[in-house]
Image 1: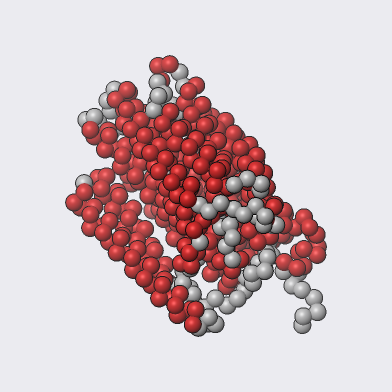
Image 2: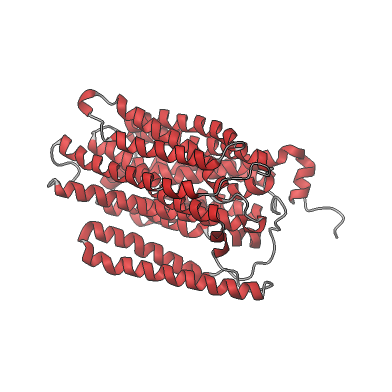
Length: 496
C-alpha cells in the first residue's frame, strides 16, 4: 500500500523533475495568480462603457469592482482550511475552473445581475489563490532564495495588470466591455494545465496538507462577510446620504468585527485543548503575537487602501478628469507597469541580503511622493509629467511587493505560515475594498464642495482640483504607513 508514492504527491513530482520542481511549481501558481490579479484590476478600464451599456450610475456599476473585492477578501481566510482539507492540487484546480466560469459567464451575460454573479465567482477563486504562492515560497525555498523567488513571482504577476489595461483599453474601444471578461480565460486555462502537471497534492516543506482540519468555521465566515459588507455599504451610504444614515452601518461593521475576534479567541482556546477533530478558528490570532507580522499587517491594510484606491482613481482621473480615451489610458499605464516588473526583479534579489524594512520604507516614500506629485499635473502643459509620476509610484510598489510579506513573516513557525499568508493578504484586500469606496467618497465630497454633481460637469480645472485633493488623501495615507513599517523587527542576518 505504501510501496510507491502517489504520482502527484510532492515526493513523486520532486523525483520526476528534480531540484527544478520548486521553480516549475512557482511558475504554475504564478499563472493562476496572474489570472486572479488581472480579473481584479482590469475591470476598472471598462466601468465607463459598462455604465453606459446598462444605463446605471457610477455607484451601481462600481459594485462590479467592490463585489469582486468583498468575495476575494472573505474567501482568502478559507485558504489554509481548503489546503488542509483538499490538498494543494485540487484546491488550485477548482479555483482555475471558477475563474474560467466567471470569465466566460460574465462575457456572455446580458443582464447586469449575471455580470455581478460572474464577478463574485471570480472573486471567490482569486481570494483562495492569492495566499498560495507566499506559502509555497516560504516553505519550498531556502531563506537565501526567497527574495529571488518573490521577485520572479512578482514580476510575472504584475505583467498581467501592466499589459492588461493597455490591451483592455484597446479591446473596450473596439469590442466593448465584454472583451474584458474573456481576457482572463487564456491565463486560467494555462494555469489549469500547469497545475495538473506540477502542483502536488501534498504541501511543500514540512507542513502536511491533508491533516483533517475539522469543520470549516462557518460562523467566522458569516461574521467576516457581514462585517465587510456593512463596512462597504456604510462607506457607500456615507458618500450618498451623509454621516447619520451611514453611522448605523459602520457601527454594525465594528460590532461584527468585535464578535469575530471574540469567536476566534474562543475557538482558539477550544482547539488548543482538543487539537484532533476540534473546529479550528478561521483566523489564527497567534500570528499577531509576532511583532514583525503585527506591524506588517498595519502596513498591508494601509498600503492596500492606497493601492486599490489609486487603481480605481487613476483610470477615472484620466478618462473623466482629463478626457482621455480608454485606449490612451491603457497606453499611459503600460510603461509604468513594465517599470514595476523590472523593479520587482531587482528588489527581489536585494531582499535576500538587505533589511526588508528599508525596502518597504523606500517603497512607501516613493508611493506617497507619486500621489503628491500627481497633483501638479497641468493638462495645458502636456501629460509627460503624469506618466513620470505614475512610473514613480509603480517603482515604489516594486520595492514593497517582494519585501512586505517576507519581512512580516520572518521568523514565523512553519505551521503558522499558511495562516500568516492568508491573514496578511486578507487585511491588504480589506484595505483595498475600503480604499475604492474611500477614494470615491473623497472625490465626490470635493466635487460637491466645488458645486459639481457629475463628473461631466463644470470647468476642467475645477474638476481636476477635486481629483488632486483625493490624491493628497492617498499621499497622507502612505506617509502614515511609514510608522509601522519602521517598527517591523530587523532580521538577524545570520539565519535569514
